[in-house]
Image 1 (cartoon, rainbow, N blue to C red):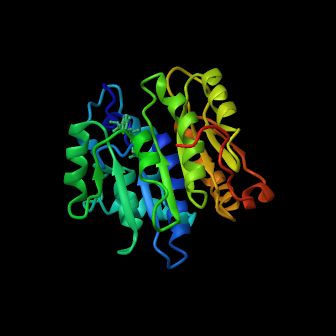
Image 2 (image 1 turned 90 degrees about the vertical axis):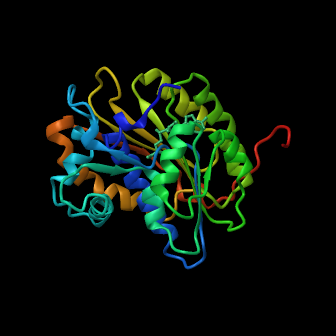
Length: 287
Ligand SMILES: C[S@@+](CC[C@H](N)C(=O)[O-])C[C@H]1O[C@@H](n2cnc3c(N)ncnc32)[C@H](O)[C@@H]1O
């Protein structure tokens, strides 16, 4: 596997997924009951931005650096900036935390976290960055999605963030996500997908849209070569979250306009009634 998230750390897709991730975890912590967090494609956990090659400019310059140089007004954006600031005590942006560190920081002592990473070197880095109580699993993320759900806590968030380097990854998401949703019907699921080839992404969304109570949140810049949009599929969106995220999007779009151009925030939220319906098991053979 050639994929190394170091080169993409803090790019605008990371901003998109991490803002939503923080919103969801903050939401879970509103109730005292413990939650479970599963990160199926965890990565190294922390990325040294100052060690990246400068030519071409690293991706975080068109991503998190924009928020770093701003004073965000929206409390969620401000919280996100503050979480990253705790890895950069000198005041210079030299390190960017991945989803495992962000989730760990937002967790309480009684919450439980599991991080899955298949590449041994990334896994070793992740263990080092997490320090004590790591909860790191060396296995395939889609396999873990079924093996580690449902959690005993019966509430929580599953984050699925594959690199999409292999053709099979989209198929595995389409095949595994509905089964995991049926196993853990109270769970919130967040899955990332890229916008680089619109036909491919529209096809993937069409296949995912069969999942009950699924919503889509796309952040699109004008199409160009490479990654020009970031997509999130959410199952079981908590009440009030669409309004919360829709509220921050004008600020996010305005902050990023200079470096990304005019961006579009395109959402398809599951309707309230649909969101309130308990998830049904998919038809087909039982595991
Ligand atoms: C996009 S990165 C994850 C970034 C991380 N979620 C974050 O937000 O900071 C994808 C990671 O998945 C790992 N990976 C690739 N295939 C995997 C698989 N089948 N199971 C688990 N991890 C996998 C890669 O090594 C890489 O570190």
